[in-house]
Each structure stands twice: as structure tokens, then as C-alpha cells.
Length: 446
Image (cartoon, rainbow, N blue to C red):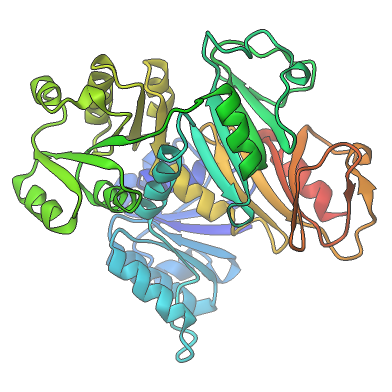
């Protein structure tokens, strides 16, 4: 696929890193950023603005299938997408930072009039990030949470503590509830797909898929017993902090939000009805102690500065908070944060990549989620109507992968080896990112 990316910033570079191996990429931006991209990736580069028709022509826009605008300017991204769409009716993806643009552009796409004046996909990374943090907060002890089949099935990731009854047990001897599957384990820096003989170890991060109620039973048995999240502290009152607080207020959590800007605090106090707004610096240990931040069940640091988020998170851990979630902007920082003891790291880039991947794999194949900073993928594959039925155990996949969920009309099935896979089934498959292409190709030709 030929993809044109307008924006050589951090998000643009992240997109290039994920798609350049299997696609023909052209990046458009100013001369100053050219070497940053071409020194790292084998891609074409056009100097200029994608809002200029001549620049789009130079980038061979007519030969491209996807145009992504991800500069730091909402207005420039919108103009570029509309220009590209008008020029050759290419599929367009537009990154925005303002809620108003997200809603109005979505309305324009669905309108009955002026059908050529729309953008195919509007991506608001702050919203995606907020949704991901919200899901993780609402499931005690979970490192990652993804919902499938309208919430009837889930992916949950947990870390095995040293005192867990699961330590040194084989997967098949653990007695996990029916309709749950272990689909992946991260041990150190390696993500792999286990077998029944795999022995679980302390600090393993274990990924489960299954029916939602069965995973609730599993969590109660092995991970958080009767532990509930009641008190949440948010450090950083920007767009993500505000939206997260609004979502959590609806669930009646006891909330505090710490924000350095006095003017922003006044705005937050007007917008939030049941949240204590604290004017102060999240790196001020004395302030955190006075406000009893250590008594929180979860602390979330979502400022727009990685160094500050790391410092705030480490202070929260020092004060005794069991579960700390931190936002990271630079992808390489995620593993660093986890190595120094931060429980969960969340990245806007990763959330945005999931959204892009779900729409570029083909009409019957999509990416529902990635886990462990892109090391694992959850893909969605719709089998053709004439697919010859086979048992799961008889599928000769070219690489390791686990069919975690089968959606068959109104049914949600957690399969075993004897489960029949039929035409029109929607398969939700977990695999490592390095094996994802092989599995996608397997199902494309079947």
C-alpha cells in the first residue's frame, strides 16, 4: 500500500516506524525535519505543505491509497485532508486536538449533502488515551483492558505477584474458569504464546481473553479478590485529566485532581461537579503528603511532560500508592517507566496506532488492539461465507496465534480445539506482531 503521511513530528515518526516495512511511505513536511526521518527510515520525503496541490502531486497522491495528516496544527491537518480528498478521493485520516473539530467533522461525513466534503477518519488521540485509562482504572489491578463484542468479551492483562498461588504452576494445572484463555505472557522483554505446559513465574505479565463475566470470576479468584477502586487522584488537569475526571465522576469515585495553573484550576472547578481540585505542583512531595495522596487506590499522572509524569509517579509509589498509571509521550520511555516500578504506562501514539491499524488491513481484516507497546496484536478476521468449516485443532496456522473469541451471529464463543470454525464467523485472534502478517495472509487466501 502507498501511504502519504503529512507530519514528521513524533506521531508521524511512530506511524512510519510501524508501517514502513510493508508499505511504500512518503512523508511531507518542512526541510528542517527531513534528515530526522530519512536517517532512520527508508522512505520518500517531499518538502512542503500537503495543503498545496503541487506538493501533493510531487508526492504522487494519485497513486496513494491512504493519506494521514498528523501535524501539530488541527487546521492544517483538516485543510490537507480535504485538499487530498478533493484531488483524488483518497482515504483520509486526520489528527485533531480539539473536541469541536472531532464532532463537526464526523457530522460532515455523515451528512446527506455535499458528500465529497468530508474526512474518512478523524482521530482525537486525547480521547483514545482517556478511554484506555478509564478502562484500566475500572478493573482493579489490571495492566491492560480491551473490550470486544460490545463488552461481552474482554482482554485483561495482570502481573503475577510473588505471593500468588499461580507461581511455579503450569498453565493447565491452574484451574482457570471455563470460557477464559491465556493467550500471551510477557517475561522480561519477551512476549510469547504459552502452551499448557508453560510454567508461570513471578512478575510474568499474563494476557487473558474470555467472556466478561468469566474474567470477573478469574480476577476475583487470583488477582484482586474483593479489592475495589474507590479513590482516584489525577495529576494534570489538561484535556485528558478533565475528560478522565468527568468519566469517573459518573461512577461516583472519590476524586482529586492536581493542577499547577491557577487559571486552569478555576476552569476545572467550573467543569467538574464532584471532584476536589487542588492548585499545586504534582512533584511537590509536601503537597502530596498534606493532601493524603498515599491513601488513593490509583494515581494517574497525565501531564504533557514525560519527566514530570515519571517523577510524580515515583513519588506516589513512595507514598504507598499500590497502583500508578503514567502517560508517556516518547515511546522508548514506556519500558523505562515500567523498569523503575510504574505499574501501567499509556501512550497516545499507541492508542492512535490502534485506530489506524484497524482501518488499513483490508475489508475483512482489522486490528482491534495492540498490547505491550506493540509487541502483540489482537486482530479481527471475518471469514467468507463459503469458508470450509474446520476444527480449531485442524487449522494449520503458519505461525503461533490463539483464536481467543469467535463471534457467530449473536453468539460469543470462547473456543477450544474441538470447536468448529465456520463461514461468516468473526475470529478475534491474538498473536505477536512479528507473526501478524503471516496469519493475516493465511486467512486472506482461505
